[in-house]
Image 1 (tube, rainbow, N blue to C red):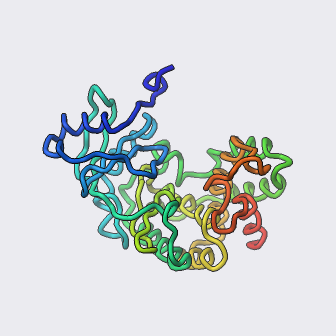
Image 2 (image 1 turned 60 degrees about the vertical axis):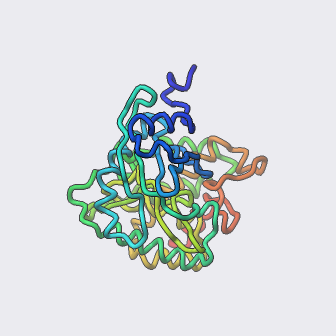
Length: 310
């Protein structure tokens, strides 16, 4: 079965050059090269020194293109660090059937590549960014749903998948404790006014320059709803003092933190269930199954934090 039949298209320099030459000839002479750290949802290329090209990798990610084009210019003035600034919108065409974007290039390496000099300072900067995001007027923003892969929506949408993952990992994790964390997370919902959320606050979407937070990228799953989905980095990266600072600055209630643990648990369980050899020690852990700061399983981090909170 070809990539096109499966809904994915080979995205390479040749394709990007063809698109730029046909739709933006004023940039046709600029060098094009892929960035070193690629995400799953999109493919990104440098276009000269000041621009980047970003294309969705599959049809299910297309909604994020127009969402970023519309909302990022409105969010940016209210945020303490840079976010992507759209420069142009590429239209669907014969070589590529979906819209795509040209952005201003943001300097920095992802936090998955370049470590922050001071984790506590990094935690403070990130939490202040999220506080600022949540304070932006969300009255007309896109309500959480399919376009955000249900980030910002009630966790129950992933209840069946999470319980199936726990069953798959029985014997490799403390399944009873995992179920307890999950049930507590499901016991509450966000009842306040919906707020803006990013939807994928991960090391791969945080830029570091000179050891400090320099930008936040990839708003494809952003929307308006429950901000608990943005708390996962508390267990996937922060620990000790940095986690405490992150929590204290955000000033969210215990129920929201419980749902945050639920979001982090859901993703760690899902990835571990796909690759149980990671938990058994037969395979090198990925960034989303082990906390790179502590080296411990994210599932264990979440369970331990749940127990401390109770």
